[in-house]
Image 1: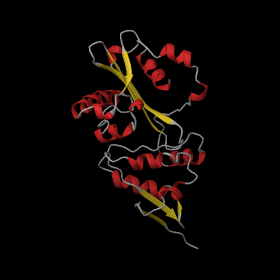
Image 2: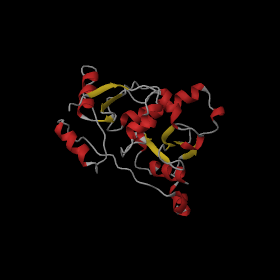
Image 3: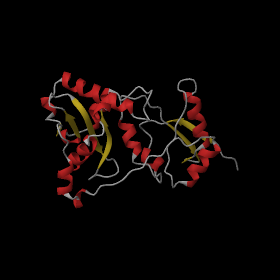
Image 4: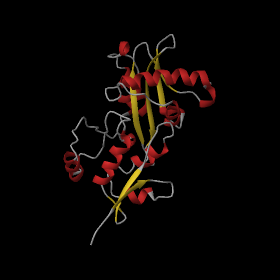
Length: 227
């Protein structure tokens, strides 16, 4: 019996959930699929109707060769087959992303209240979206994008597309800012809806300008938002 691997682009007619079933990072699929400001090419590799890896990896590399300097794959650290495949393909580990969970139902509110402030800094959520004009959005975006591009894993990149910045926080409280007495931005933190947890959010990013670091602003932002 012979088997042939089929590699083809994914379309909206495909059953994305069925193809991703069993994958430990399944919740990332609808998140990336929802992005509109980033060029994303989706492929699937199928063997007898089931997803496979090596042929799909090779097709992906071929599709971006000459357009980008390298390729990055993500997988759960406990996924041994994925680690073995990455090693077989000659990939090297460049970093690990670790997530922690904060149970807001058992939050020590008094402790968070005490930490949700920094001297000389005004920390607050965004006002109603209707109160922010186009100039205000672009001013905030410029600040957020500058902090995003400073991050070690984003240095040299194009940054965060404006459309994605606007789509990240669906409600005003999800983006909190820190400002000085003159109203200049010092830092921000943003949370997004968590695709895998209907009653949870994912803290996406927190950034503080270099000259204001070390003053507890990032901690204050996080505690303010959690509270």
